[in-house]
Length: 193
Image 1: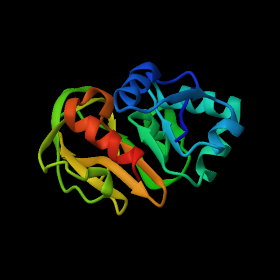
Image 2 (image 1 turned 135 degrees about the vertical axis):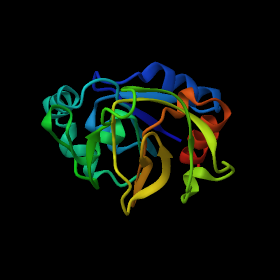
Image 3 (image 1 turned 30 degrees about the horizontal axis):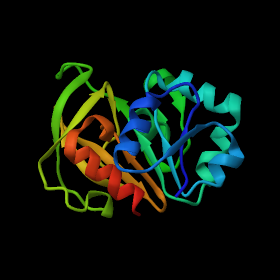
Image 4 (image 1 turned 180 degrees about the horizontal axis):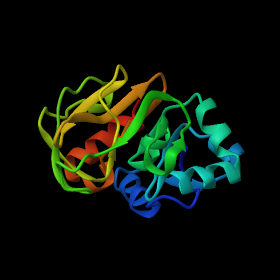
């Protein structure tokens, strides 16, 4: 199986590569359209600020490539947020895969959320053999509200989408590569879709 981790200069890609390798697979880091399109599975990571990350995608033309992919694609953290219609962060126009706008947590909670938290309302093969209220690792200041594409929720001041899915696209707000055995199972489930 060919697994490509999109390398566009805005992701913590080594930890994801190591997590994939721990599961017994090899992953290629690439920003080549040809290589990405030929992959069996694509992982779209993201760390940092939304508007600068989108600028990097536009510079490489990947903003046009990613929404047209037909194989399973997993967006992680900022990667998931960039797959949304837009984001309050930097007034960013997103890839419009998930029909939801990303919002900033309000002052009622500490921002960013940096902690282990639970996932609930699991409704996707992405969560096979994952129990309700399993703990995952979160680091973020922005969130996607609960919408039709929500496949898992987390509560931090309010319930929000900790995972989204639409057609062949999946997104997790949390970092599966940093979420211990639960995250490993979720990553394994994605690679076996």
